[in-house]
Structure formats: structure tokens, C-alpha cells
Image (cartoon, rainbow, N blue to C red; front, side, top):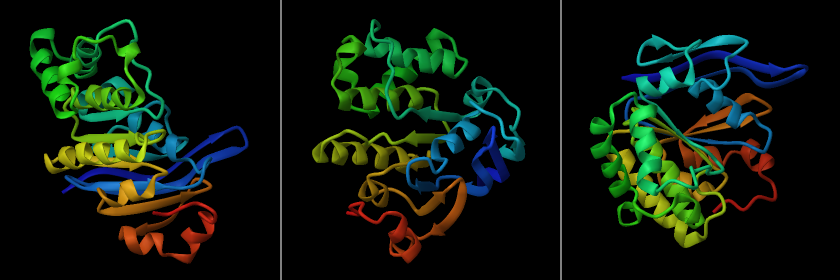
Length: 240
């Protein structure tokens, strides 16, 4: 069953078109990976899905509902959760308090309803033992996990991951992959933008390539990465 549908979505900033007639679909329970060079329009695509920006043309449907003009908060309440490429926790608050913000304000729930959701998200991301630490003192891997936990605390049907593996060591990436695999196995649909291709290949069912704001190629991840067009775009990039 289809969860997300973008139809001919375009977004420009002045003369610069960053998303050009892009269409995609995502099924319930599916994991989709998105790659493309810097400036290809990947983060703008997430902004269009999450509601941070609205398209100049085209439409966005989620669970059969037109959400093209809905605010980000309304989309979060409907089941779209997001992590950001650069973590920005509330540094003076504890890890638990950060995640509780997602479970309450993000999901539109009371503190009583949100507390067990926050604790469950901390447990799923391996942060429960650090619940009372100040978020601003966390190392990078744990800040990435906190981004993930805050998004999970909203109980999303769709989780958007924006280069969550960036900056991590190989061992830390492996730990993160394991966490995302568990989230995916629970039934949450995922769209993951990532430059660390082997991380994507360990999780996703389908890979989509964007270049200059347009869909270049999509399909089986191994076949997509073997495409001469994709190899040309990533010439000089280590594909593991």
C-alpha cells in the first residue's frame, strides 16, 4: 500500500531550480535510499516532504491525503518524523527532556502520554542509560542517536534520515546501521539520504539518484550503483 506520493514537484529560488518536476512514491514498510552529488536537491526534497518549504508546482500526498500546503507541525502529527544532518539538541536540557519534546510538542501529546514514548525511543536507540546527561555534552554518535530518538518519539509512519551517518567512524556507522535496520523491521517506512553508500545498501529496498534536481535513475540498489551514469556522477567517490 502506498504511503507517500510526490507528483511533478518543483521548487526554485530565483533563477535556481533546485527540484525540477520530481515524482516518487514510497510504499508502507519500504526503505528508500537517495543519493546524488552536493547541490543535487536532496535536502530540498526532504524540506518539501516535511513541509519546511512548499513547492512552486506539484503535489505531495501522505496516506492518501493532500498535504502540499500543510505546516511541518501538522505533518509531524500525521506521522512524518525527521532527523537533521547536523544535530542541534537543546544543549542545556537532558537527553530525556530532548526526546520528551519530540514525544509531546512534536506528536501533539500530553507529558503523561509522551513519557513512555520518550523512554521507548531512548531504549531503541541505546540512549536510555544516558537519559539524565546533558545533551550538549554528548559525543557525535550519541548526538546522532538523539536526533533519531527525537524523531522516533513522535511515532512516525515515515522517518526521514538526512545524512545521519556523516562524520562517524566505520565502527559507529555499523552501530547506526543496526539501529536503523531494527527501526525498519518494526514496520516504519524510511527515506534515507546518505553519502556513505554501503550504509544505504545494508538497509534500503530501492535506490533513487537525483542530479540537478531531477530524477536520474531508480531501482534495485546494486543495479543502480553499477549504472554507468551513476558511476560517472560519482567518479572519484569511493563506493564501498
